[in-house]
Length: 264
Image: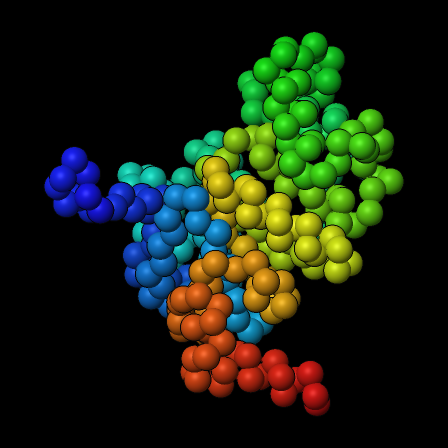
């Protein structure tokens, strides 16, 4: 790149998370084996692989639910997450969403978002204290982003499955994480909801980093930028979806296996 007549290097996004020689051992079973993984700031990364490949376990280690047997998990170039508890990791800026939505079904969409706001006061005290302009603006922005503005005053329990998933993603965003970990966010959705979910992930990745564990290969094909394939606790391949689909080893251990299963 030329800058004032001189040649300069393009600035690459910084690595926000990486693992070094990561291993997880469950009573002699190595769920994660010597994994070196890295994620850049603002990156949307999909993790794919057969059941038992280690995808969800990797997310569990990053968020502190599972402690590694050995290796490091470095966040923002300085913090080894392996030395922190789950709640501490959340406070550091990592949000985790599991497959089943976890929301307050008897509260409205807006109330769910307010309760999730990053703040020092207690959970239900948050509903009793008047919100300021900045807080109301944040709720408005995220309600718009997740596509639930028209249902902001409706009870969360009345939402469709897909809308509940979007609400929980919005609740995560209210906590201002720098990294989101999502486990099968499109599971159980209609085609229309799946499409909107993929678009939402791309919007979020404009400002935050995302790791998505996903089994819906059509969803991955449509929305993935970079894909990491895991197999038997190790990283098998990384690349674009086109590169992954054309890789013979991936076809053998994962994509081909799924095709066989579908016709069994």
